[in-house]
Length: 250
Image 1 (cartoon, rainbow, N blue to C red):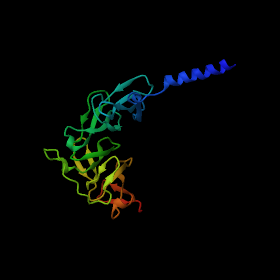
Image 2 (cartoon, rainbow, N blue to C red; image 1 turned 45 degrees about the vertical axis):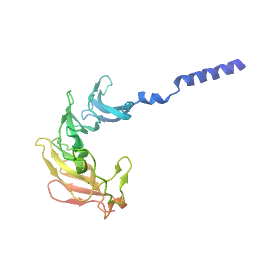
Image 3 (cartoon, rainbow, N blue to C red; image 1 turned 135 degrees about the horizontal axis):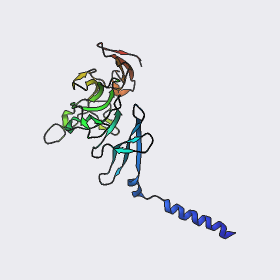
Image 4 (cartoon, helix red, strand yellow; image 1 turned 90 degrees about the vertical axis):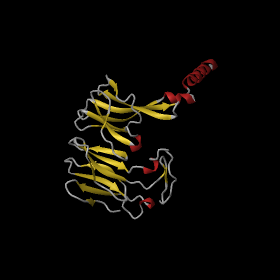
């Protein structure tokens, strides 16, 4: 009777040892995230990431899988730091953010033909694109751009000292904060023309576009000192007229 009880215990202990993880196992783990279904529903766009032990950072690649799971295509084998990938409204192209040819300008929008080929840099905006939204027509985009950082333009690449003038001067995952602002722009894919939609001393973001492409909604904190509160409000901006309309009032 004792032997019958002891055997399962020993077997369970050996099984546990066989599947026990060690620290280096973390470098073999891969994670899939942010799936996006193509407009016609036949393909799924997703990111697969893992830890690069040599570079001590997470690296990711962009993949496209058929909806039946039978075919998987690697899209960004050599491209570094791909983010915010989306399908174009007609499903023919894949857009994403990554560093452009001039890395001082920050992240730019790239466009890739879903049938294959390398991504082509679509924007070359002086500043860093934090976000972008396709118009439903597929002819234009809203781009959310953080002002260009002029502190790092010296040939020596030595940053000028920080001068703290803000109430909130540091942020997790960002470090010390400067006075650059984030604004909304209208980008035409055909002409590459960039029109300014918002400006000033406040940050704007979280953009949504109406189904008929006639207006956009966004949020902004327009209080006296945004650093001291989180009172964001919702605004509507009609693209056929000047000015914006506050919808909420906190």
